[in-house]
Image 1 (cartoon, rainbow over the protein chains, first blue to last red):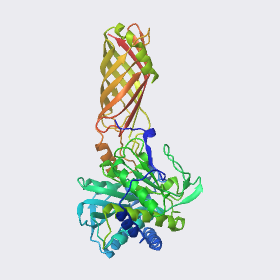
Image 2 (cartoon, rainbow over the protein chains, first blue to last red):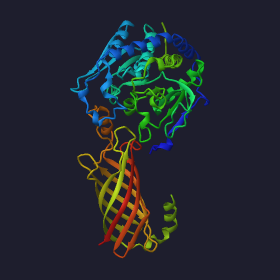
Image 3 (cartoon, rainbow over the protein chains, first blue to last red):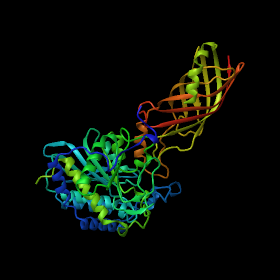
Image 4 (tube, chains in turn purple, yellow):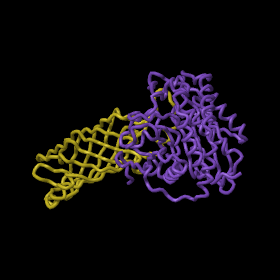
Amino acid sequence: MRPLFAALLFLAVSSCASRPALDEAALARAGDFAAGVERARLMADVDALVTAHREDTPLDCGLFAPSEVDTARRPVCNLTRERARQLVRERFISLGYTVTTQDVADPRFPTSNVIAELRGTERPDEVVVVGAHYDAYFAAADDNSSGVAAMLELARLASGRRFARTVRFVGFDLEELGLVGSTRYVQVLPGERIFASIVFDCIGYKDARPGAQLGLAGFPIPTTGDFLAAIANEQSAPRLEELYTLGGRLGSPNLVRGVTVPEDGTGPATGNLMRSDHAPFWLAGHSALFLTDTANFRNPHYHKDTDVPATLDPDFLADVTRVSAAALAFWAEGSRP
Amino acid sequence: MRSWLLLTVLLPGLAAASPGQEVSLGSTALVLTNGGAYNVTAPRVALEAAWSLETGAWRVGAGVRWAPAGQGSFPLELYARGLLSTRVGHWQPAVGPELGLSGLPVIRPPRGGLPEDLSERQAAQLGPAYVALHAVPLRFVFGRFTASALELQWGTSLNRPGSTLRLQLGLLHLGMTL
């Protein structure tokens, strides 16, 4: 029986642990790729996404029984997605990608995941997925315009480049209502060989004051909210180790704090660690790494109308995007012109 | 852990146990969780009826639990159990494995009209069979009658061990040997 209960979760890696030796040439290529991340572009994309959400019409509130929903946690009558989806799709197209959508015609909650793919040159059957949900409550600067902006920045950097493995960018729909888009995405690709996947959800909020970071029971984490939480299952544990190494090489050795949960990542002690689009990947036994600023455990604006761009830390967002870009290049084995 | 140690110390007395059948009725509180957002977090109170046969050191048996407010369309559990027991005067503690089938849902559909995709997927991955360790630390025998309180059980799903946690506290069981 696997080690199943709360006390047996592992704080598997930290910034002081020994790291595996990685190929220097690949690290150098990954570093070069990541150097292209532009803070100003990221924030411009956050602003554009926030504008899209503000100008959008919320989902029909009649779909829900608000008296039975904890609307402080899930303000379901303030959920928008159409314009953000359009923005993501148009950006992918403008970057030269062939864009597809995975549409599910559910009578109450139809979803449309937006997908841009760069086919691998040597191992096209092995896929590196970069995902972020584009639906959001209110203006949604941190949750999840920050994550979508990072995905778009990685797509910009990867555009026109060659990778050994297939790189796939996915804008997930309706995460906020229960990981709906990602669940449907995983269901239609049961046999896919996912070498690595990263899911961005809330990656732009930083508060380095002691006490700003709330803890999760059973997880020894710092009290300062100035780190990126990277949450892995056993399938993605090697990717987490590589993320650490890459963070160190990019001059951010203390940026990433990681947790690896046993086996496929599911279990009674991992409820709070399965609150984003990586969870369906875990349930299907795939490698998935969840990157987050820990959302409501740090950000007091979580799911509120005060989640606006001015509350974000652009340098933090850029650092997170940079290490993610390096990871993408390293895992997909590129990039080459 | 202490009941295990005590049981080891008392094992020489096991042979003195006399064979017999017992029927019992009781109540129990059950918690089933996978840690997710769609759990029934409150303990589910169940009524229990069991039969057991004592053969030397072992008491083997089967039973049924019914949790009328346990949710699900079939809120029943059927189980088989083997308990290694000893006897010191009136006291007869026991411990052993339980295998069962549970109709009590670990995952419930989200309320408020929210989509059910994830909860359905999670529920579909959890089979009805479970395995558990059952401890009976406070069982007493008075002639033909037995009383047991605070029985403890710790278990998980059989098809995906570790994906769910099963905790059970037996409140009170009263029995009679036939």
